[in-house]
Image (cartoon, rainbow, N blue to C red):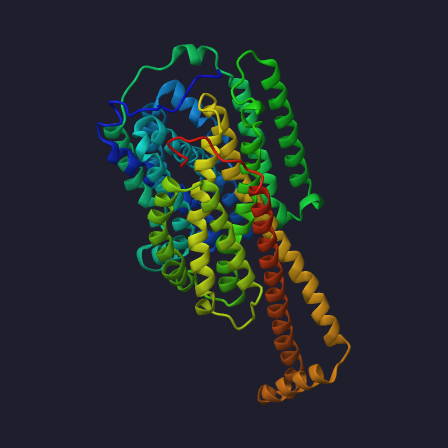
Length: 522
């Protein structure tokens, strides 16, 4: 199992056949995954209305549509090595397109959940397969550019998603959230058919398959994902569902690690990521995910939840001020990675996030989209300058002969790490809002002269609607202002947290040594 797949050192005949088609296929799959991740974060309110779901039903729909991604994602690299990219992607892509076509017609809740579970599991195949397409299909001189496109997709869908989702809902119909994939998934399948070669399954690899390890790993991670995704809503350890899924997930993971020690041909032995530099870079990537939440969560959520803007209004700001610098900086980052140490590029990216977070600590309740311009420029630049070198440097430090095992753990960071970062940030903001609301309200209860004058002024302003209601309306207005200020203070604390995460990533980066010279290192 140690040498089931390796990265080709030289261009192959397949790589020289139609490499551009493979590159386009690389872009389409991750775009669909990124779009649907944003869809359930930003467009869930519209989906609940379209399907007639309650708050709890909508929350579970989001979780059960996303959690299945991680069941198959870690094993995709192995499936590609054993059966070939074509068999792994083409058939599932067509099934995925069919399910995307019928989801908008579903009205029974349990049937809707079942469709989304299968939909999410198939969606989990696409991103892991893209890296395999890059390394198995393209000439080595194109690897960095292809990874650059791959990294660009993540940040681009993050920032363009809110505007695109709201545009669909407002102007084209919410069904397009699903029906766009009826076109994109078969197109991706066609590009893979034309851009990759057909080969016989690796029967020796299949005979020695570690099926138990794959099942334990995927199902354990899925249970942990459910616990993390529902944890904030159900108040973590105060809820039996969260506790049971956490315990079940950890039990399955312990069983997985025992399995990898005992079986003759382990699929994803932990020793594959035991190299010092690989461990450091994986931890740096976790701090990157936390610092990047200043862009993926804090800015859009503040504008939507506190300033009460529509996603379309927020999306236009994100596209102009985050996507534009991202488009400009992607070729610059690829150029730099070919010529200088990737650690320096990564250093610059983390510095961008640290600078953006510091700007965010000056947040006030009067900020609108225009006030986030400089921050968004830094965040858009930081995404590509961080994500690209993290992938390239980690792979350059790894053992190509153990790429399948490394790929499994990368998917853990991508799916579960991202969701954990978002859940922790959401909980941090919720708890911060509660604390600041209590602290600000405590000062009002003390009856200071300023607060008394403010309530009296508001009461006089609304007195025309009746003296009996004036006092209660004035109190309600003050309570709204208190909540708004408490939310603003909570977001300021969250920006400080992302700053400290960026700084922690910079400190760990100092201990990463230079990668050996190769296609992914200068």
